[in-house]
Image (cartoon, rainbow, N blue to C red):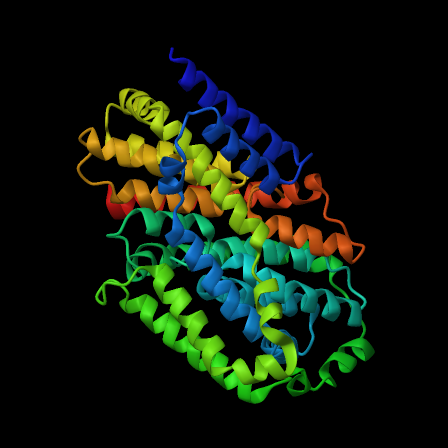
Length: 430
């Protein structure tokens, strides 16, 4: 075996082990791995840059900026309190309402950004009702990953798949994934209610206090809010039309962000400042992606990915049902224990290589990967970026979510969602 191949696999394995162990921040690990790939001559600098998917990065940055400005208007606080009042602050109905709100926002904003905005409000409402926020937070993690599965921009794995496969448009994701994601969401929320309903009790006095909150007071800047809603509407409309207009999804997101900054520059100068908008971008997540793309690029350049694709083809003999099910279940189990982003970064070139080896219709394989990676993130607390963010926010509030506590609820629900997905993939495509 070539020494470059051994080095590339060793670097990749060490990066993965450090990401799982969480001993050093995963962004530092990914960037260090990327620099080793280039320094040791496995990749040239030009090749490394070529492997960075700027479409994925642009889409994430653009959406984070739009949501960062929108968050300053108090819209998300308003929506959470409005939802709580709609269900008369009933703790069980509140679990359903907040889970649905999180899932819908995750589909159209992206799940990482959604939990950053909804979780602090959820904790605040739980405190007002003197309830343990844990059931709500676990439900929101699970709902954010299921909701994010439904669209191109809902979850980082979908963003990466859509960026790598130009034929899969914003509408393709909705057409192929939204119905099954909605079905899984309804079943998941029903089971979560059964699990937690006996722990969700409060007094009528505390419910009345929440009902007395005026949610409109949460809206801090109405002129800015109108501009944000207009830009969000334009951006989401452009996502629906992006292929017809020959625009990449990153161009749409960055166009929306630029337009919002342009029309709201006076409000930003007077109050929150442009720096505040850029602070809302999760730069650590962006550079984690950069490092990861280069590390996986090392495996592509040394031929490791095409070797694995050949082996997978030998195991399944290119038989579509077996290949689809293998990708779906492998993606789900792997994404439960390793953040789904590095796993999808590894799988995309592998599936492309299968196409070059004679698999005519790759579409069932892409949908199997999307469902497995997005829903598999619900298996454990480290399975997806949104999970890690909620765990961090809960810890800050003095309610740390333990790995085992989440595993008991999340893993069985994840397995159930993958069984439903298997039936769906088989009936619809195979």
